[in-house]
Structures are given as C-alpha cells and as structure tokens.
Image (cartoon, rainbow, N blue to C red; front, side, top):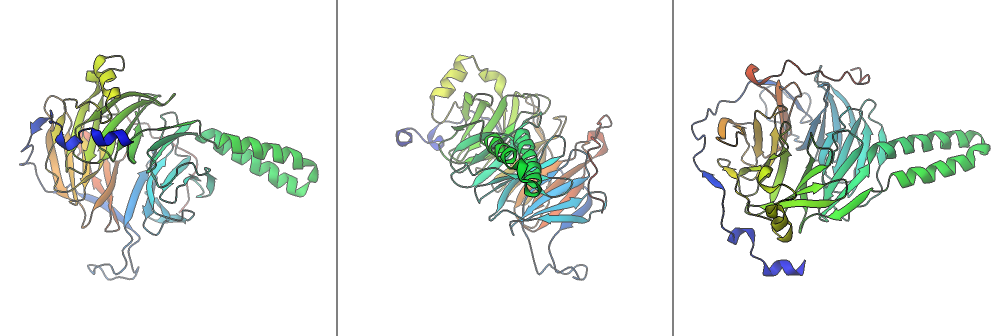
Length: 414
C-alpha cells in the first residue's frame, strides 16, 4: 500500500530481542549418522565415488505420518514418491508447469497437496499417485506455501499475491469423485446426463475458496496451522512481519516484527501453540512467546494497528551464515531444527528460559531447501539443491516410544 513508504522499515526500528550472540558456538559439528539417502541424480550406472553428472535439485519434501512414503519435488516440475521401507522410487507425478515450492500430506496420509509457481494447487491420491483435484486458479501468481488444518478438512494456501486462501479440501475431493462417477455413468446411459451435469456444478462450487484475505504487504512466504488449535494460522511475509490469524473468519489476532528483511519460514510448537519459531534472510532463527500478546490485550490491539506489527521481545538464535529457509519443531517440542543456505543444519533446544544449540553440521553441498521429522522422532530428513535427500538418525533419548502410527490404506507395493 502507498502508506507503507511513510513508515519506518524494520531495519530502522530498535531490536528488543534478547541477545544470545555467541550461543552454542561450542556445539559439536559432527553430524548425526546418515541412515540412507534418496536421489534422482544420475546417471544410474555411475561408479561409486564419482560425482553426479546430472543433478536434480530438490525444492520440497514431505513424509507420511505412517512413515512409509516420502514425496519430493524436483526442479523438473515433477513430484517423486519414494517407499521408505525399500528406498525404491514408486512413481513420478507430472502435472505442474513450473517449480513446486511446497508439499504436504493430509493428516490421514490419504492426500498429498502441492503448491506451485504455475499458480495452481493440486491434490494427489497418495496411494495411487492419481491426480485427485486441481483447484481452480485463485492466486494471482506463484503459490509459495500450503498447510492442512489439524483435522485435515481444510487447506490454507499463500502466495506472491500476498493473500491467504482457505479451501474445503475434503469436500472438493468428494465432489470431484461423485461428479466423475456420474459423468462416467452418463457416458454409457444418456438418462444420467442431467444428474451428471448437476453434480458437476455442485463439485465446481465445492472447489471454490471458503474465504480469502490480504495477509501481508508482500509475498506470503510460509504459513502453518497450529497443530493443537483448529482456528490458528501463522503466516510470515517478505516485508518482514509475522501474522497470527483466526483462520475461521480471516481475522488478524496480532502482527509481530523483529527480523531484518524477509521472514522465510515459520513453525508452531506442537505441544504449546503459544511458542513459535521463525527464520529469515537475516541469518537468524527467532523464538516468540505469544502469551505476551493475547488476542484481547492492548499489546495485540497495538500490533494490529501497525503495518509492520509489534516489535515483541523475543529470542534471537544466531550462528547460521546464510539465509534460514526452514525451521521445524520435533513432534513433542523438545528440539527445533533449522536449515540454511549455508548448507548447515542446526538443532536447538527451544527452551524460552535458556535456548541452546545442541548440534550443528554441514548436511549438504548446496542450499538446504527443507527438512522434516519422522512422527516417532527417529529420523530427520533434509533435502537440498544438490539433489540429495538424507535421512539422519536422531539420538535415542529424543525418540518416542508412545507413538501410534496410522496404518493408513494400502500404499504402493514396491
């Protein structure tokens, strides 16, 4: 908006972050053991130890809750589904015309959602690889990010048009299935033609957005749904603000600032939705406590009135030597991993009283693009522009014995 030119940029605002400058500089730089790797790099007959002649940068990954499948988006606009029991490639999915920036499995592992620079959002059947639905184009340009609601019913997407869009994902897929079934029946018996046309109309309505709103001054870089809050969405923008929304109505609860430049990634602590982590182009990871800005408080009201948001007191975790592109809490919130353009993974203990750097290691030979944890906390997956996906063994003390993994429907038989 034109008024933003009169406001101080975040770079000119004093920083109230608690300085933890040399934090964890003595942390071990020996990596966790590598369990295995996956790659589309080639050629396939390359002798061991030889450098790859063909490299397919990996832009995004996602893992099913049942820990049986990994999806990876490569720079050839395809999505590769891998079996994690055998490390075999199951199938390559084609359909996007440009880069795929984020992938996410639905909480029941049934659907895989993809967001692309071609402006579209697609849903794939995870068991068969079939395209279940391509949402009608609603973002004006690139779709950078997406996230499922905790119950798996809705999907939130964010893009370079600064907007957040909420979709009825389950309803849209059900509508499309019913419409396809009746269309097929009508093709064999003309008596079904009217019913098929009616169903197609209903399906089209169910695939339109439930709501959408302008969320940031610039691109929505990343958004996430709080795992334990059915209405809470957190988004981060290229203009440098962090926004907390009531996703049910699209209302702003509060807006925060503190990063210098673009905020690139965000995650919410799965055990405590008041604690969020962000990463930015300023090489820092930051920890925020939302207890200080309860929705009804004067601080929250003040934050909503400022275009850049409130400069809330927070922890700044320093050490990365490149932009931080991904932050992910472990399922029980005990650890926080960050990945950066410096090719390093850093693992933090995100204690608000005394955050510490537990581990740091060079994980890849090129920019890290994403990381994610297994639900049982036994492995950390990383991917990068070097075309590699690594599975790292998490120390036993952090693994969970009490996790009931969903059995899911029959996945691919490799």
